[in-house]
Length: 460
Image 1 (spheres, rainbow, N blue to C red):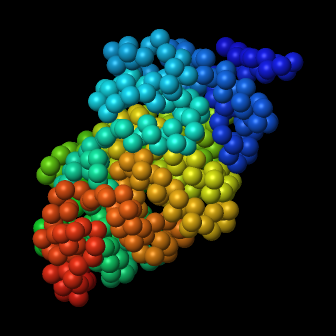
Image 2 (image 1 turned 90 degrees about the vertical axis):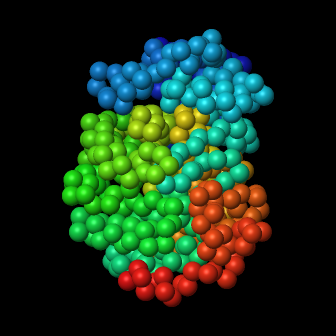
Image 3 (image 1 turned 120 degrees about the horizontal axis):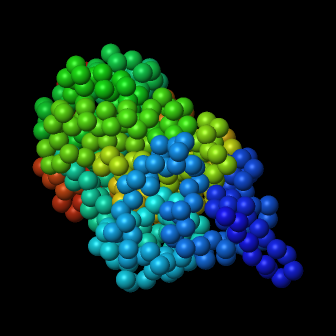
């Protein structure tokens, strides 16, 4: 179906819904690289005007990747909740924006609506919103998940303690874990990106963290961010796997470039459930995404990168994950050129994920060759804190020495908790207070009753 509008004496025409979505996107380098971006600000505004008048029902009738050839499209369409959609089925994209910003769209109604929305609908409405609109709507949404603690409650901010090491040194990783715990980090997960995909190394790291958890009765969960097939093999050997990780994308072809498909994701999910390691809940999948991943695999089918990203969230929500985060600036300036583009993408990703019912966190990051710096990350981190982000990363000194990129530190999480009056997950907070790591005024470091040197010795 073609879409067009007249602005003055100029006619703007868009060949199909996929083209319209791309042209309506805020400017970013990845869409320019893919050749799908608007050619001018005027064309972008024209596309947004046309998009605002598109009925939401059109997204159920016009697939941007064919149903017959893409299993992600099939998952999105086949699991769409038509009953939940009934309340907004007469809306256009513009109507949806107005409703989301109104007081009628409260926490409960947004939670009920999520399964009635498709990723393409959510991507479309985000293109009509200013940054403050994305923050306002996301802040109203509460997505709670549980494994050994409770993540996502309003008034709380969790962190992923990320103790990566360039050689997977157990002692080096142990030192970073101790460092993070002393700063109140780790309630979302202690999650390690291994330098290799060695099952032996992954197993050793899992036993390291599990020994710490059991020794000191810490309500945490661990995750080695290895390939899904490695996790499945470790589970078969009864290794203490808590969370099952996988990077995912928004098209079947892009997921195939990661060496996965939906059947394999289901196998990993069911394998994780079989261990029954959760104590307060059974959310155990951990997914990472990022704008530009489909384009980098030449698997984007001329779809703009933000819409591809939203489709990845359509995959994630099928598996009831504990954690989802966009690694927003990690892929590089070819996809998000500078701090402004990274900020916009981070707010979009958080908004779209939350609206689709996901427990969204964010790796607020940039690569050293991007036109961005730590001030940009401070700004985005603060905006996401106001928007109600479920978790952020915690890395020693903000500098990941294994992945070689810049993200957020243990200190950053303390700043965000203090300035916004946020707390860690309730179970984790109780443990910190019991250990004396934080005092009762909260978010202020105390003299920990837990001896750091003794803890480090236990971890060696």
